[in-house]
Length: 268
Image (cartoon, rainbow, N blue to C red; front, side, top):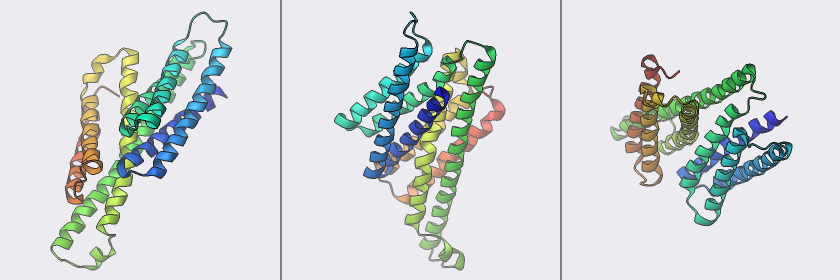
């Protein structure tokens, strides 16, 4: 039952991050309200879960790593809610909660039951499933976004040259293409950030710090930075759609190189 509750907290946490990122991209009050509501729900579930763990371990003289990191994640959620309520720095709230989500997911390492090797293997496998699921969903969303960016460039070029054809007439408007591309970014970039955070913190927890300089990890950081630049250009500088589409294609090219780096990496 506790494992199901922990999984529910993780999934609701991830969903709240998607809504927070949507608010940052499009200044959507509705997305912010939903994200904040889900984050408050996560805080309530975490508080109840933490209290249950503490009460069930009252006779223990040592705090286990599981309770320690669960408390740390709970504290990050609390701080982010305070920032959201009183300081109004939404982007900081998003990144604080990316770290909080990664800590919460990686805390599965600290809950291997009685230390049995089978339980340790199971929690490691479950965490790997979380990482792979996030990164595959991110790849899918960002690939769809790249297709919209290519469609935008093609349609813009055809309209500029005044080449009207049946194929062009069947395409959606530039504004609609841009809107759908934004939605792909809203989904893909947070998932990519969460999957990378889980991977990096897991390396630190396992003591495999040398792998942080692996080509796969470095190219993953470069890819995320490219998409963050895109998000900044889109949300803060309000660049025109043509420039954004080109930047998106460049970011996706970096993502493709990151995927191909599996052949030269010892990370996975």
